[in-house]
Amino acid sequence: MNNSLSIYINELSDLVGDRELRFALQESVISEQNSLEKIENCFCLLPSWHWSSENLALFLNSWKATHLKMLAIYGLSCRLQRLAMNEANSTIREQFMLASAYNAETSYEDLGLDYGGETHARLYHDFAEQLLGDFPWSLEQYCLPEAREFRGWIYENMVVSDLAIGLLTNMFSEIYNHAEYNLALNAFSTFIDRHYTFSSDERETALKYIYAHVAEETEVDHFLVVVKALNAYCAATNTRIDYQQTRQLFQEYLHRIGQVMKSLTTAMEREKNAAQNSTLMGVR
Image (cartoon, rainbow, N blue to C red; front, side):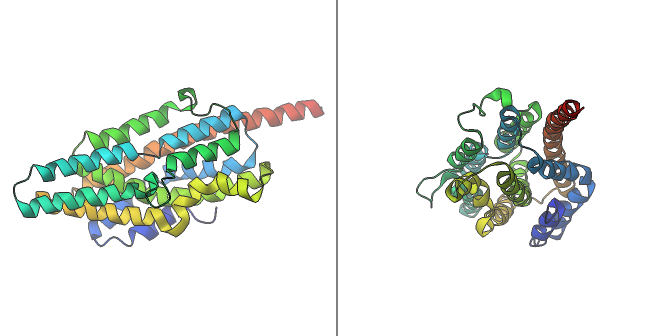
């Protein structure tokens, strides 16, 4: 890997003007180094083998469950908008509306608003189809329990929990995604080059979903605009960020992702070791 997750996260967190929020981001990285290593190890392992369809489906379905959170973002934006619509004070109403609009901006790319309606869900399907053909990778049986739990936790945080928790969750997902997609692009590019004989067009189609999040620093912009959403929400409610709660949330996010990637690594190592042992037995 050219860079570590912590480097990507810390570089982006340096752009945050709020000193305490910046420290919360950086301290969560320090405290969850073990989780970051699990994630990095998984992406390091990915290119090393031409995985079975079942194992690759497990990776693609489970990884998808940790991304593509448009419904949760929409729900969070609607909650903020509803507060605005029910607010009599015009100044407060404007701040709620700004928070809603800023938060919603993170879905412009996902919905393909500037790309002829080509959604990121469509790009992910194309990505999986290039690697697996018509194999039924999207069946729920190929989603790890840890990945399903993570998906549910994200939705709960954004649509049900305190609004500040929802905004912090969305914000951290964007800074984490910025880091992870950079690792993923390197890992899947190498994986494809080693194990597939794609034409240049097929390769581009396969990698377009990941590249779309790396090109033009898409996730960087998303992260910074959710910081604006959080600031507008705090202005509307005349509250301050609970930085201890914020650090705990960021740490839990990384811990949960680490558990998903650890389970994927275990499944891949089991397959690779079994194949290598079988080959050695054949040689003997």
